[in-house]
Amino acid sequence: MQIYSLSEYICIMSQETPYASALSPEYALLGLLTQRPAHGYELYQRLLAELGQVWHISLSQIYNILNRLESKGWIAGDVQRQERLPARRCFQLTDAGRERFDAWLVAPTGSSVRAIRVEFITRLYFAQALDRALTGPLIDSQIDAVQANLARLQEALALLPVEEPFNRLGLDLRVRQLTSILDWLAECRSMLAPS
Image (cartoon, rainbow, N blue to C red; front, top):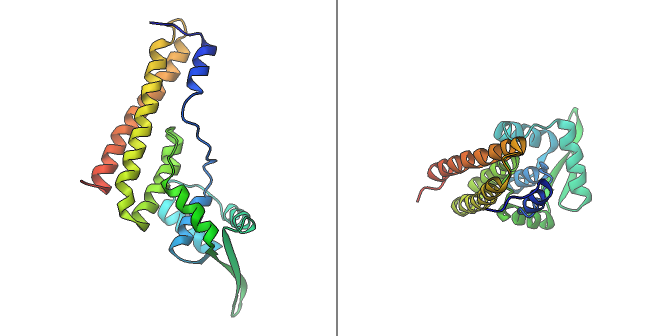
């Protein structure tokens, strides 16, 4: 068995599948707009009601994200006049926004605990809401990604010298978290996409 130094270990671990998402709720907002046009406060209420344990976001953040999505051409807003109330903007998805959301929906999620807790659950929510046929393959793909990352971590743990107990403890915790996530994904599969 080859023993690696910490710098060599870090080099091995950096070969994990890259995870480029900023875990932004922009995809959750795009997803809600695939279902129907809405104004900012309605999107905020729906996000809290349907994904409030996943996303913790303020109303001002919602409006900032909507402005950014509109500036990129992924949504379009129209001013709606209201009797005795201030005007409000109603947003709808553009074709470019729909393409962006559809590509994100089937893209792989990183296999970190946070990515799975936030981004994967959001993907799973929209797969169930928009096309239940996506749910099984989405879960299976995530299981494959987690298993691959778990195998890399287990190999790296086996190669870490005993003289590095804190690195070993940190890596062992990650291994245990991913093992637990695999159990959770199996439960997701049996609950949401039974064979």
